[in-house]
Image (cartoon, rainbow, N blue to C red; front, side, top):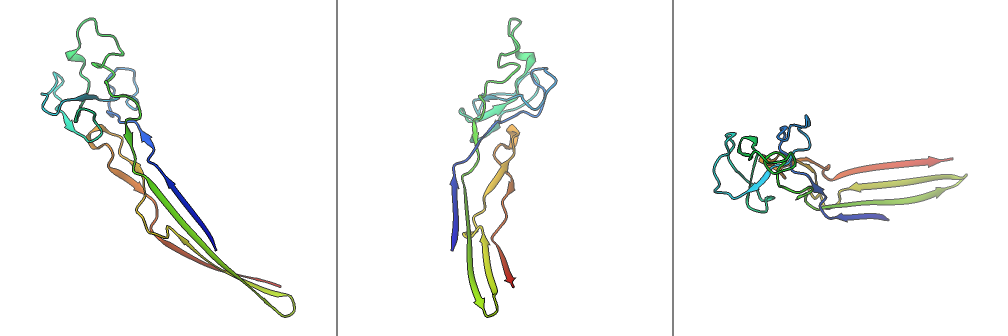
Length: 156
């Protein structure tokens, strides 16, 4: 018997806006603002979105139109006030098992039989999640369900 057990905590991920709010020509790095759930829409017309990952309860896009004249490019009016790696993916548990048995016969003939079980406890492990602030943390990919594999090897 050869068991393999792996338990790991959830990995952190960035929550992103999906748009270029700070005008750096890269929509894959901009983060939203953490705002109160009851706050109104911004001058850009975006409304708050409730999220369990927000420290205040909701996210909203940064709005350049609300920025004062002395606001720098790193201010929350352009870059968002949410920190990096605020979201955490669910924990994972991987359980694999191999059972092998060897048989020997006359004239130096041997048979090895194996049975492998992957994801023995059949846990739905979330591998990836949605990074956009509107649906942050929604699972987008998961590991395979329980699988069996059988094999035999004859040596002579």
